[in-house]
Length: 277
Ligand SMILES: NC(=O)C1=CN([C@@H]2O[C@H](COP(=O)(O)OP(=O)(O)OC[C@H]3O[C@@H](n4cnc5c(N)ncnc54)[C@H](O)[C@@H]3O)[C@@H](O)[C@H]2O)C=CC1
Ligand SMILES: O=C(O)[C@@H]1CCC=N1
Image (tube, rainbow, N blue to C red):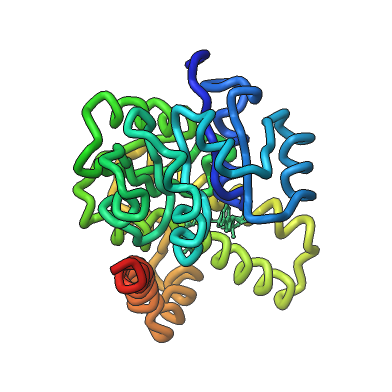
């Protein structure tokens, strides 16, 4: 564990909680983590009770105490959040931003100091240490800063380093990605209901089907289309089912979905840029 480090979370929502639950008692003792949010003290109380983290309503104090500050507010709230406490940051600290779309340069401008910023795009599976995270370094971040962020996110899953421009695509693909899978499961559960399967039985079968398919992709190294063909007997049930997906242009819909999410990431960053300038 990195025993000397104090890590402050500005923002205490789903992503902050996923990260806290993934790193608490592994990389960091809960007492090394300080959590603050806009104003919801019940939420802070819940996080303190559940994970043993420290909570703080004075954001300036929470920042001053930290070695690493994780930005975990919504992109639209970052200017309002950082501007009043910018003076509390110093260049020896490291900022790790989870914000979709917001560039490291925007964060640096908001703070007004040459402070190192690493931008990260994890996903909520960090809660069970299965996140797929991509990292990118801002202009003042050193290799040592990147190594610190890598260690943090490797504790909660796999990590890859990309050029910052590619983080929009990562956000559309794997940042939002778990939601696409959950949406598929919702649809499978709805279908199971309509074809008369008991809910509990269906739930178990769907879950194991998703886990099994994910493990097959990982362990066999076969292309997904090859694995799909192995399931699809000529003239059989899968072929009939996939025929319907093709008529509904399922693949086209997925491609359009990921492209739109990627575009939205760019929009979130640009909206902020115009309000910062
Ligand atoms: N939810 C997800 O799956 C992922 C989210 N992210 C990013 O993580 C960030 C947080 O997302 P969620 O946790 O989903 O949002 P959320 O809405 O659940 O949480 C946002 C938190 O920010 C706090 N906040 C708002 N204004 C603040 C201020 N002025 N000072 C301090 N805290 C303030 C809120 O009180 C709340 O605790 C976003 O920027 C998002 O783009 C990144 C990867 C995945
Ligand atoms: O929906 C969002 O904007 C955030 C970023 C990636 C996942 N959730």
